[in-house]
Amino acid sequence: RKEVEQDPGPFNVPEGATVAFNCTYSNSASQSFFWYRQDCRKEPKLLMSVYSSGNEDGRFTAQLNRASQYISLLIRDSKLSDSATYLCAVLTGGGNKLTFGTGTQLKVEL
Amino acid sequence: DAEITQSPRHKITETGRQVTLACHQTWNHNNMFWYRQDLGHGLRLIHYSYGVQDTNKGEVSDGYSVSRSNTEDLPLTLESAASSQTSVYFCASSEGGSARDEQFFGPGTRLTVL
Image 1: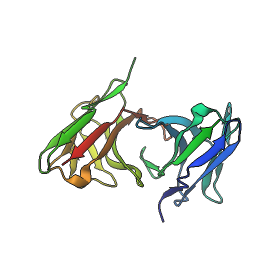
Image 2: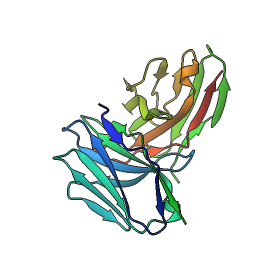
Image 3: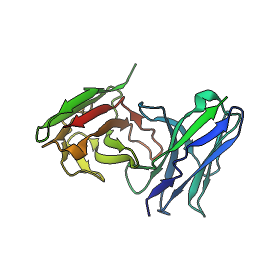
């Protein structure tokens, strides 16, 4: 089993839709969790850190479920500009090493 | 503005040649990382450093080496390039003070080994 797993998609959704992605992790000792956004042929950029209580930033909501070992990303009122690949990342053990999932591709259509 | 840069952005080389990819950050970050990204595998950690003179192996370190002689730079060397090392390489850095530190990524180097 991979340390961090994501559904690769693609998720094709109409503009204005709500879409959710999940990311499962295998190590129950994992400490910190992140969602990164990656546009085609570009570098990943941090979208949100995921806190134990869940957090919201505008149209984006991230949640952590430690019991079931997954994090989620909810995007409301999808925009064309949200089309990208969303990577989840998990920090495990000491130091600042991240393990990334393979990413979920989102395509928002007119 | 502080930034992280990589050079070259594109490189074509031949099997067996030694190749060095440069990474330079101006944030004065303690932590620096090298990843490769391949279809179906996502980002995989090659080597990382938590400070000057510190280097550590990541998940896919075979065939690669790094050195950290100053805070700003972490060059990645492919000792003898192989076709399996054709990939996109990303360098990243983070401050190092907290487990929640954001990793900032460079623009990437696209390497082709013929």
